[in-house]
Length: 124
Image (cartoon, rainbow, N blue to C red; front, side, top):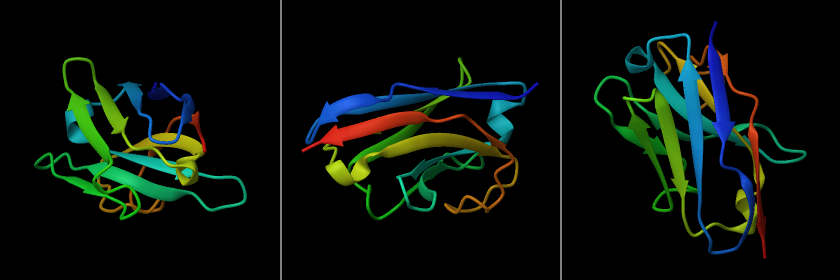
């Protein structure tokens, strides 16, 4: 059975940092691209980052470029999202997703499995 479990969310002041974790099981981690997404109240889900399974390249939304960093821990089948210089507009529920043939930052672009999300709240 496939599982993706996000953790590490919480309340932080603007300018602070959080590290989210996406612990996975039930599928071959190295064969899947993992992406992070977020959804704020009243808004559509948007892509934040994608780490390619092919060559480990990372792609980020313009709104988080230079502040967020995705990385894989292959020993523990976990992906991390380091979030620095957080802003109030980063407040959202953050989800990780896995796709065997995921190709973009859009939620509909090839992601097969999704986690339940973790809340991130950034106060001003």
